[in-house]
Amino acid sequence: MAYLVFSHRMFALSWCILFAQGHDPFVSYEGLDQPHRFLFILGITHLLYTSVTVVLSMIKIYSWREFENQACQLPTEQLQGQAVN
Image (cartoon, rainbow, N blue to C red):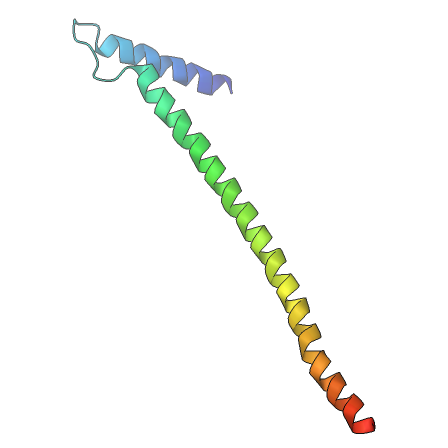
């Protein structure tokens, strides 16, 4: 973790040294960092939303399977009841 903080600071320092000759950067370091964080949060949110959707879909399909099994047994039970009477 310390290495990441150090490299993060080194990048910021090199960014400042690169444009210290009287030229301004087109986008500041903070301007690059904010969209990066936004896209990271957006990606995590997308993965979580997709996972929840898949789980809920699987639960719903499982309930349909139970209904179909019950619906298939009902006509055969009715036919067997009519044959006995």
